Image (cartoon, rainbow, N blue to C red; front, side, top):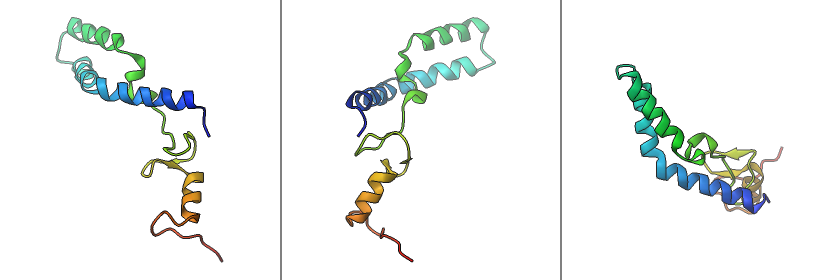
Length: 101
């Protein structure tokens, strides 16, 4: 089980990302637009840097929804390999069975 503080920190980053995503994308479009003047692009870059760091999508870490584990997380299921194995052994994942040979 991961530390609760890291799990809460990541959840805060996710909420900030959702809150500022639209504004961040608009400012990035202005910064990347080569047709605009250098002053406008620089102002947009300054506004972008004023936004909270944790609102960036890069800072969000994929974590297991069950255990909070950060490594070995399947993106589609949003759970770690260990939690997935445990659930499949209990028969809670449809279509997944323990292989034997």
